[in-house]
Length: 95
Image: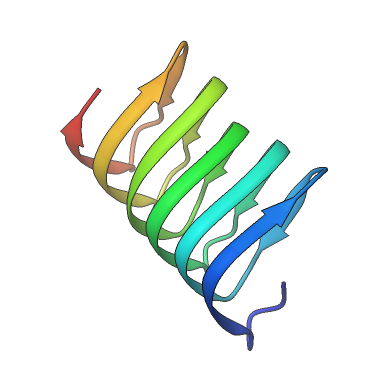
């Protein structure tokens, strides 16, 4: 989804996905979900793996891991087996 996209509701994708725009609601991705530095997501994220460079105010369920990259901001709860928070990332919530 490109940087000019704004979507709200429920979205399910059966593969990897890259979000560059805004999403509000429930986002389910079976593979890797990458939220780029221009992405803004709110709601619930369910993914195999999450790589976050942008901003999210969401509860995250990621079975295979979560990676918060420099400049990313995440507010919410994380449920995962592996968490990597890189210098320059901001996380506020519970794991």
